[in-house]
Length: 425
Ligand code: RNT
Ligand code: ZN
Image (tube, rainbow, N blue to C red; front, side, top):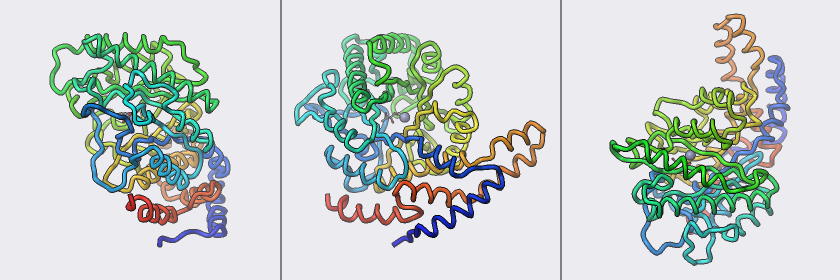
């Protein structure tokens, strides 16, 4: 058994940490409040390796994403996925949302193609969401379908294929609107299309024109913005689209600059050494809302479980320093099938929250002053010293306040669930 912390110890450590931060002008209680006010959207697809519950009459494949690993016990039914998600959420302090893909529709064993899905196929998800107080987000699914096998969907040259996907996306926005109405706040819909080519297409222009027109048609549908808000996700390359992705960064940046939708930045969707933190302030010069897909690429867009690395720290520093927290939607996007999946969810979410908390515990005004004075050494020194400040004690207090195990204790709960539920499947 890994150790757990007593409330007395958590309080004692927190008091000491608070004093240390206070000497730098930082209010740890205010940081905890800001963290508590920031929901993280958990991606349903970590629970079952992006399989979904669609009923098929043909074999499906493809679409440029893939979970690797054979850890036992992926959620095979909606009930299992909900139970696993609840377990994960019980080990995550603070507010969470839950992010569904269209392939998680519940169609009662019937084949319902993607252009025919409706809110009724998400009735159980909506009831669950309401009962648990966990708002939903949503995604059309443009992969793992026979009409996605060519590698093109919304930009397909064939009207029949393209129109099918346009109908699918319209259906998804109607579902999202129903979810938003159910929860009383907007459901965020992220539109990601895998469209692209493995090798050197001659025509890079027309697919983009077709995708542009398709998106305009989709967004021309009157959907209540109080209940559904849209984001579009750019990407540099994927499996099978190594050379060319229709919805590149330039394409979608141009799109959102000329349209009301918000951009979605996924941390794994750029050149392998390119990070997203510097893009944020540039985007907020022109837009007032941004969606993040918090992920971790290892050498490529590998969607590893998020950990508290420099990329995460820089990301949240930018969001906090720029005053962008209220305008940034934080969603997770990783899928590791090689380790306990509940563990993956919890590790990644807690890491993102710790990144945010570390940024909230920064004496930003002081750092700004040092920078303005030209005192670069003091600025860098302070940033370095802050790395060993007792953020863990503040984090443990956050867990304690939100009835979630502090420190290492959650790992015991994961191991128990693994033994009694996951391995019993
Ligand atoms: C794929 C995108 C996309 C997906 C999910 C499942 O590269 O990141 O966001 O991971 O929609
Ligand atoms: Zn993503």
